[in-house]
Image 1 (cartoon, rainbow, N blue to C red):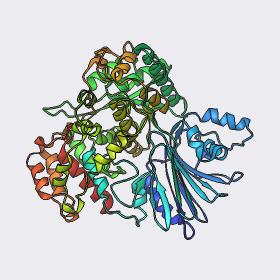
Image 2 (cartoon, helix red, strand yellow):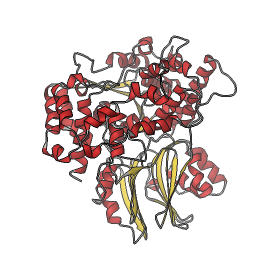
Image 3 (tube, one colour):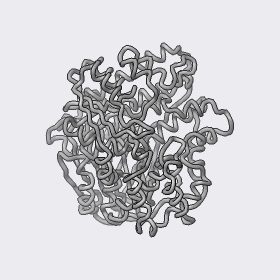
Image 4 (spheres, rainbow, N blue to C red):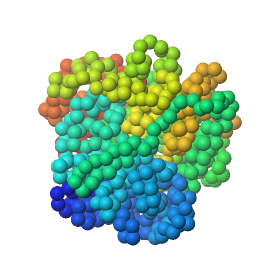
Length: 596
């Protein structure tokens, strides 16, 4: 995993100085090596986290002078050994042993279609000297980020927004559509928008070309089909197929690394199953990591009782960290400093603190993100399924939206009030073809859009803040494609009585302790950011009462005062603190926009 950046200038020579200004904001993503390169209209920069082929031959920017191609790449290509051998057999020459050079050959062989042939997580940019064209692509599931700023003068890109802001000439005005998304979809702003007008992000499963005159050409190269297969399968057959696909996904992510790989073990079903499958794959002396926080009267702050059962069964080399509230609050600004976009999920801070500890032991971890979205694990999916009243958007919004449009209009000042943008976007996403049932449409939207800018982005940002690569087997696109065709009632366990993620529970039985499988669904707990009181309440009050917040003029003061007066009475449908949502966004503005 790495950090990439670059500039294609349409008027004059590219500015290597601007690229060098971006590199420090990417250094944590790639602490092992950094370099910048410029040739006429193009300049590329790279920070490397060495995971595959640890030698200098895989340093970037990488150039293939024979083919006239240069690349900067972030991610991991799990089928690169097979592709590399194929290209060698076809007469291509290689100077390195890693996956970066394989992408260059893939582009030379297949052109813009090359992304379809790559299995993994990736965001990369290739400069084609002969065509005077930049080709960029992002993986199907959006695991790796790609931000860009396109003006009449230049096209700049980077792995995080902080790098683009570091150039000093980005439009930092707030995008009103994105602001509506921020407060309706708990901080999910679907691509291509971000919270500011001057920065956009490439959609998952999409490639784009930019020529030397600034003309863009976008194409979506991957769509998720959520229709039933022609041949009907029994629950047992579906279970076997999902088990096989998940085993392959786990193995790929352990085999393609030249460094040890650990597991973030939360104590839930998903991460516990990863440990079991890695043991099944023959991994010995497995490293596992868990984190917990102080309890609140309403909620426990750790799931150690469950993670300990998995550790005992598989005798992993376990590392357990208990973080007090007194340690959390001073570290909140650090975590927000490392957020490319404002993220309200309380587990963002948890992942940040856990990643700091884990990075001292390993460079790569596997994590269970994606299982709940792919296999309908959250409590709201059965509620949506049973609610047959109204349109698809109505059924979804009742259980998912953080606040209705009417409340959003009370939240922000007149300058930011507009149409119900989020409902329009969700209606378009749910209305796309090739999904048989309502829950199929919801899960496809969640898997391909919502998860990208919620848990997946949080994990990427918070792990890469410490130079730690997170791999997510449940988002292997082959597994996701298979699961999308599975009947929703089997995922929800309606006939079997197993409840949500029924297929994973069947796979886990006998591999994972029964107490972990049969427990109620848990979440990465950090109660102090949910039940806001004491010094956490004082902290948020100071942010929202600050001169910077008042002068920015985003929030309607009456609404702010209402939340501050009774923070424990204002929660979203998904049980998030509405006060934290406001405080987080304002602190993100102060951290990234007021100082950049």
